[in-house]
Length: 132
Image (cartoon, rainbow, N blue to C red):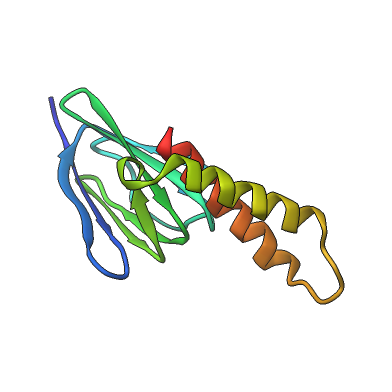
């Protein structure tokens, strides 16, 4: 079975540096499924989404909070603005964060940055999904 070298780098540390069989990446225009031999591409990441990857038949999740991805035939490199392993996310805190973000996004005032509120909602949703 062929593999793909996945690297995910956050602002503070290297999060993933593994050989994987597949990866799903939350790009701006939708999720990108990457297998070994994929065509080269460069894409921005959604402000909030879940990256999933498979190692030895086990699926792992990572909440990503924006950044960029470079895909080559044998590798995928993610430079994330922020990221958290699903296993490190406190599910109750993530759900509370989502409730606050949803309320803020629903009650946009003229003084509120609408894009920032929507981005926070996406990040909170990604954290809840990754923690599941």
